[in-house]
Image 1 (cartoon, rainbow, N blue to C red):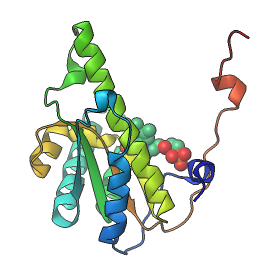
Image 2: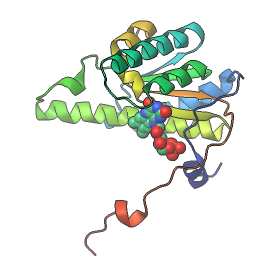
Image 3: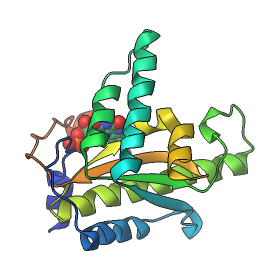
Image 4: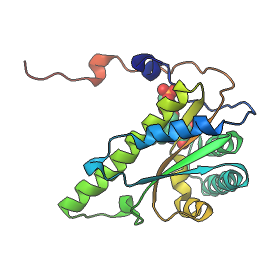
Length: 195
Ligand SMILES: Cc1cc2nc3c(=O)[nH]c(=O)nc-3n(C[C@H](O)[C@H](O)[C@H](O)COP(=O)(O)O)c2cc1C
């Protein structure tokens, strides 16, 4: 698949066929993540693949957290729907970086630390985009999941992880091709300065 075609054609897929993802495909997709750029080439990431009962435990923890938020009157649109799609997707890949402390919750950082920590998040995010594009190239559908961060402690417990959860990707064979959500026109989002 041509690169620009892959970038333009990739969609967030939230409905999946009841069809398993072949191991070789999954491995090619995970290899694409490992070839992402990373700050200082540290590759301080880990991708944990959850299926079956493990994935269902994650769904349950998310539903519980979503209902807790609802009961407190906190509006988190899409949290419960995301929990359900995690349950229905054949595979969930959770992306962690090695640092275990809840870095986003701190208020102050030494400059060097700030650089390192922000670079680590960016590195894992680059790998996640590779996962999405590779899944698309393999004829699979995938969606970036941020809501798993709201159950960070439970997610780590369920997966036996000690790193920092950055995000997750749910994937499987798409049930349909979703329409492309609009993009802002270039002049609204791209600024040119100088000659
Ligand atoms: C950081 C991040 C977190 C996201 N979290 C979720 C999520 O928890 N649930 C979900 O359904 N989609 C999630 N998405 C997918 C976005 O909703 C989607 O990318 C956006 O609507 C554009 O659609 P497209 O991916 O088809 O172009 C997330 C995307 C990003 C980049």
